[in-house]
Image 1 (cartoon, rainbow, N blue to C red):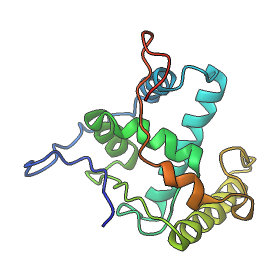
Image 2: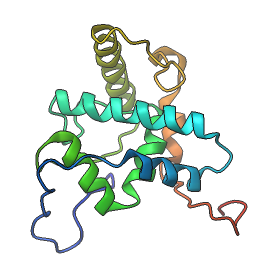
Image 3: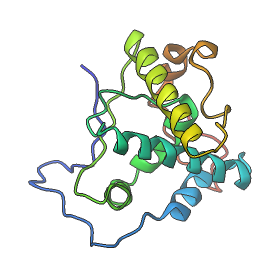
Image 4: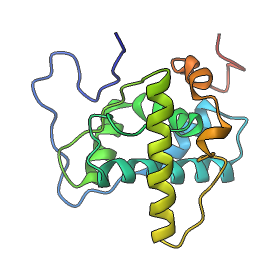
Length: 170
């Protein structure tokens, strides 16, 4: 049994839809990532959120709202977890990005499924970036043969919020 991080609140009958013309607030996500990872430079955080947005756009373009096709790299997954920690914000941003009431579910997988889904995401992302005449950021999109996703995703639940008064989580 795998946990599913969902934008649905317990006992919520339906998710309220986002206002038409809404836009995602990626700056708010950058501030959240900085709060969780104060050791990271803002330039890195900006790149991380940009690559996370590429991942969400890829899932939207391939209609992977139930997370059956693509898995993220560990760094993109780290940003996804930060975003999911504020479900209302996540809900608004994803619906605004998708232009619909769809919500991208986060369904962690392990083992061969993780490897296959990341390889599929990587292949689709490389093709997408080629079509946009943009480079692939290899720190966030490493070649599937160069990473051990099973090992990296084993710590998928270590979400900690770093606050100025706390040096680390534990």
